Length: 230
Image 1 (cartoon, helix red, strand yellow):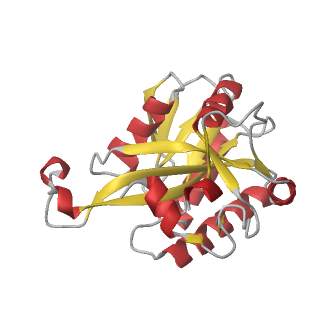
Image 2 (cartoon, rainbow, N blue to C red):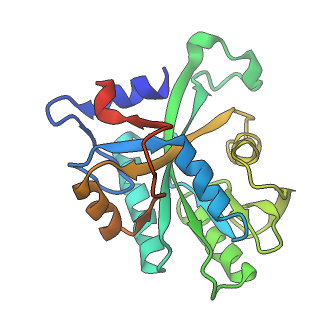
């Protein structure tokens, strides 16, 4: 199932909206902007940041929505504005298959994951940032999170606070590869579809109230408007 089909099935056909767990934008028609995510990464080229989710495969959509809201509330309480990202991967439904590449196509199911990208506060040291990320990993049962440090290195930080570098170039491909090889554990290809951008004035207010950051787009090139795919 493609991400567009997934989103299509999760749209309310009466209101023509997507109930987005990351911003509770019940009456907002959002955009998913791949070009906007590239712009965010360019903006953070010389800054430290982290990417983490509260999603777990064993929980249903409602529970993951609750967990992501709790994660967002923690970030807001620490005055860490975040960008809401949407990504997906194809998960093998047969748990007995250890080699992902041998999973039959009819056993692969497209899974959508909401996550948050947020910059490190300038007042926080790298050590404190790593400790903070490790505490989130532990709380939300995550194997790891992607963290870019002040020296420019991109790392995977685990629950204990241990970390290792996966490179020093901030690209979508590099970050997706990190998710695939280390966070998802089974080398499952992970792709970031883009960053969420509000498409209405109400949406912009909701994003602002929830401390969700987003790139200011000159136009909607590179965006998918959810109301247009119903």
